[in-house]
Length: 464
Image: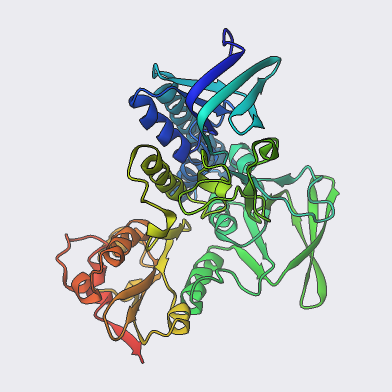
């Protein structure tokens, strides 16, 4: 901010460098609008995904799976983290230059706080700049939640996912509190690197939003890798000791403990709204602390929008990108696009092989009143999917939930090699009303994973 004026006016002010905000900033800048983008950390240009989220974690999945038995665990891990951090730095620098290099866009690094509905103050060290704007976008993302468990927050062995992926010391014993997607993904990564991994999940089972039959296969794969999963575990205390910590938990009325060199708090993320002084702008928040928005992502102040994790919606980069389309439609389009337009949004747990889902589970479909038929097969039995054997990983299962009356695809769970790609095809078919028979009888390139649909959708395992 050296040489900056003490006050600045923008057509569009974006607070936070996430996917949605930076996309709007770039588009409006190209249209000649004066854009100011504020990011509080010089390590977060581009947002969560390229810096501490999708990119580094999936890169670690790749490196962990490439480790050979003869590769020393600590040496391979340190090498991997170094390479991954180089990739994230490259992407971070590219994100910064991509916007700051535009004549119409100014990037400020500092903390922004509202003064009134059209004004924020940006503080960076001793520098202070007042920015006014006609339109403001809040795009500050989310931050890890560390539960209020005695000893957890103060323990030097407690880490967030951000901290863990940046350390070059591989924990010999990693205990993960939380068995959701984040916790299980990290469990798979660090077990492959060579850590002893224990997952403590408070719910009676992991993957509670997936049908039991699919969840059982996924859990079997994880436990076969050597991951200890303890469901129904209520963590009560963390006690520090010399060279490690002890995590105390209750299960089935009995007290247990597990030793750890690192404790990953993987119990969710909360919208990052602290220090924004939203009350000064008259911007309302929900009970969970998210910025309250309508279907067009407008806040309680119509000229202020909230995009990405901060608005309390699904915490995915691709949702933040779609948020940018909604906001751009408001600013320069017809103003018709809304969150209600989203149909068949897929999700993936990047274990190995990945578990990707979209639409309704079997249980949800029946509860909704559908007459259903289920098509599915273990991957190892899918004749039309030699790719699984080519890459030496025929583990997993594919399951489709179909409407027995209309042949509509109601949902799918794909636990297989390439599932993160396959699910996009299924989601696209669902959005455009492609029937299960059409997906089954389509011509797919060989040998690919997609051709598994030829077999799987022809295998009806039950119907009512």
